[in-house]
Figure 1 (tube, rainbow, N blue to C red):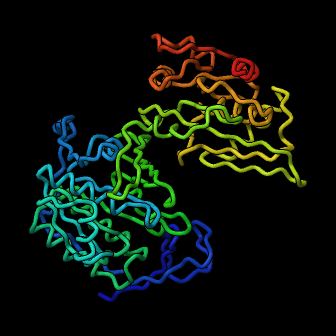
Figure 2 (spheres, rainbow, N blue to C red):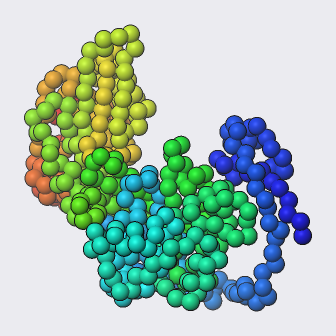
Length: 449
């Protein structure tokens, strides 16, 4: 059967019979790429299992997960790798994805699991040098330098590993397609083959995908809906901190975060992230405020810094790191309208220390207090926590799980906390902190000094 030529959008994967200057689906210009579509193949008879009634299925709640030996990675995965799952690990080039996966393979190998590490970017000798530097020498770890997907399937069927690592998906090439590795059709077809391999043989497949300059995972973000779990490895290469987030997880929570530090011997888990994030805090600096945030089930104490300076030009500047800039602008407007703080005509810079991204509304109060502290050049009490959501009317709204946040603050030596009165009345246990409730933003600023 003769192959037909189609054009695929590199951004969204839209398929068109002819070249188009602009994609009709996502609107991107000059992103159509010519591909040779292979004719559909009929699956072998008896490949698919027969349908079963749902009542006859017995899903085990005690599924044996594969522990990697890296506590932070196991936490984000929901307790370890699930057999037969397909996990996608994305991040910028050079951030440490291959290092994390190789250390995880070491932990699995030490636990007696068989791991096949398929590297398309390094030769076996190069991989051996990196493994020696990281202290990786597990007997159950096998290395294969191959990019042909057919060869990977054959070796997996022969070796029968519990875990298969693909480093990276951009280098894998499906022999049935004529396009180059890393193209839209290759990414989709290769991931689909690996997905069927994982489900059919019960092997956990961990694939690495790079993030491009446009911030897209594995080229276009075509793979996230195909896999069971999507992890993002974030951080600055010039800094030692690394964050691992789960944005999709069919077998666990999607709001967990793992924190690592990059050392000379590889990545190290941070067992006490709150203490690590506040280690270099200047307690008597104006604009420095500590808040208690929840990342999944883990409470984190984070330092929010603000710098407010007079505007030297016509348009005041607004910059934020780790926070939504629109949320900062909203809080600035509420401060001027309901607290009488004339701050909109100043340059404003807000930062969350440690490279953490604060997304929950509970950080609103800490942002407001840090802005006022910097504007007045008056430090706040270094032993006080601030958390609560700020409404457009200047009111403070309750936030979930205040006890966990207060317990974390008491564990690290904080003595006071300012929070919404609604959350204060919902407390069921004593937490060891002096708690001060406020109903409005103005009251919280007065309590915070």
